[in-house]
Image 1 (cartoon, rainbow, N blue to C red):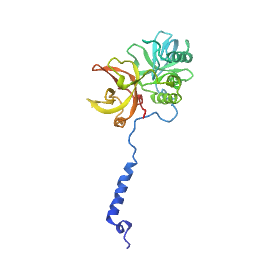
Image 2 (image 1 turned 180 degrees about the horizontal axis):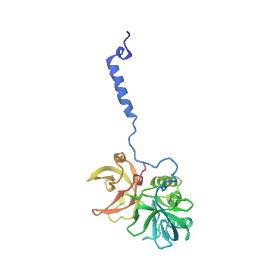
Image 3 (image 1 turned 60 degrees about the vertical axis):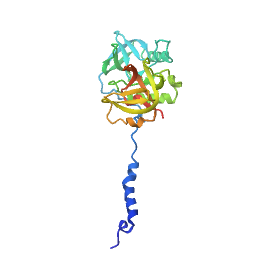
Image 4 (image 1 turned 180 degrees about the vertical axis):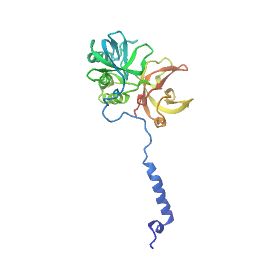
Length: 272
């Protein structure tokens, strides 16, 4: 009987061939990367299985707050618009966002409210997704026009995938507040103990470190993004080290310094 192919070749070559079979496929396994919005079209059913009730618009407070006819105030979920009233004057595109919300839901308009898991904020406002009776989600329009930044605040994170996708399209087209660097944008090295409010914080990830039961993403050896314990297990935090990122949300005080809590993976955008 003729010797098999593996028996007829020399042992060193035989060994190298076997090692190639063992090790080459592992090089084809992609390294884990940070989550990004899906490339699919925004879903129309992210609120399909949530309870809702009808209400009537009384007036518009600003780009992300409605006063109902019964006097209750509603802070819309899923996005933030520039401040209409702030120290130092009105923020750029604050009036445009307010006008856009007024056009979408003028006084007297019937709307459907989908309350969040957290149904009220610390100011007593109802937290809800607002949908017109024709099915149009108000948040989608404001974000797609570049008049609002998508942002998730746990546990009210429904539709974040849709809104992040719409925001990216608006940024790519340089619409609205994305025509230039928005006033919210701030380098991590310029954050200090007195910095507060909503910001898009940019910087290079120096390290990811463990703080008790949580992890912290450190920007420029200066600023910490604390990953909330309710975030998905297995987030590829180490994949961010050395990358330039943008993280968004409202700053909090911790040990006399400003920090940002990560409420959703899509609140972080990898720039390069």
